[in-house]
Image 1 (cartoon, one colour):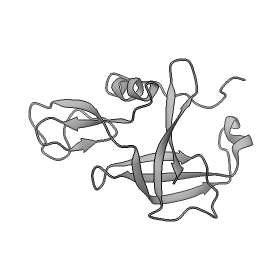
Image 2 (tube, one colour):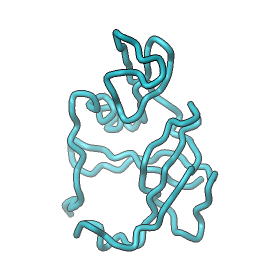
Image 3 (cartoon, one colour):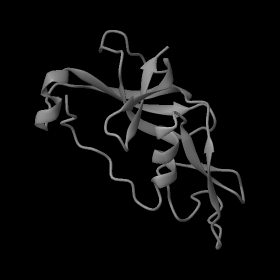
Image 4 (cartoon, helix red, strand yellow):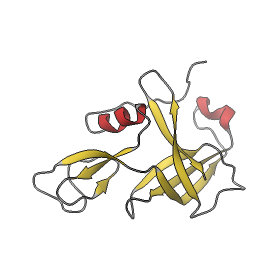
Length: 138
């Protein structure tokens, strides 16, 4: 079976994120000057605004809490039709207040999703080169 949904295309900034995901690790860009995690990856730290940015991707726990969510009722793209309805959430990782990722919840329905619910990362191989981090309810 082929994957018929959009596939992420890593760029120079995001390659370490996708490399780590392929190895089943959630790694987030972190400023080496002030220690602030930044996602999505950027060229300037949003906290210290260092003139000489220095970032390193570091593994994080993969645990967090739901900050917001929505149930998708319309596929928008043909590849998602068979998945309807599904839940998209904003997850705040436990490592830092405000460190958030937009994700699909893989084991959820609108009946069991609540703001503040604990979640953890899971990984799905979608192509030989790309592994997609997603989250599941705990």
